[in-house]
Length: 241
Image (cartoon, rainbow, N blue to C red; front, top):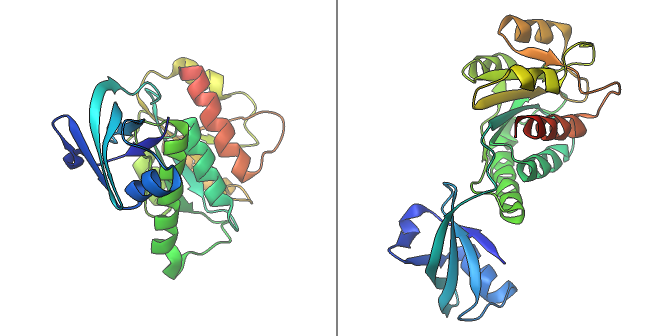
């Protein structure tokens, strides 16, 4: 069943009004008809099963049949701090990590980052946000994970310190894995740090450890940056839920 997100002010009693791109998608792409059912989410983990009551060129009205708590949102809020990768890898990372259940994604500049966003940052963030929304719709999420502004590694460390726990996959860590971390974790929010193609420098790993961020192993093989984040998120959610 098709799924769309709306702002709470679009919900009025037992009616929801949809306009713009989503309305156009419903009428022109999906070619829905009056009486068909679609799912609407209020971006705050509530799902609404709805029946289409009116269809216009750029406006759709639906009647709420039932409201249900969204069952797809993880209890643990994972924020991914991703070192900026080359080319279009960030788009792939966002898409897949949103599907898996990440709560927010923060692009981070590190010592070994090659990419420099500079004047392109605003446009990139906007594009990444659209990719996150599309992935959230496709995977039945109860919210659209936020793509936060670019920050430095030191800024990311400071933000991560506010979480209930934080990990940084590191190839030289031999004793602690995701399972060992998860067994001792009892909070609700976790920060996950993933380096760019060249990984983190020893200085960055040391700074992370000084700030209470725990190095973990993702196994015996070295993973690409576009793989490591997905693996870490998937393992965390599996172990914690």
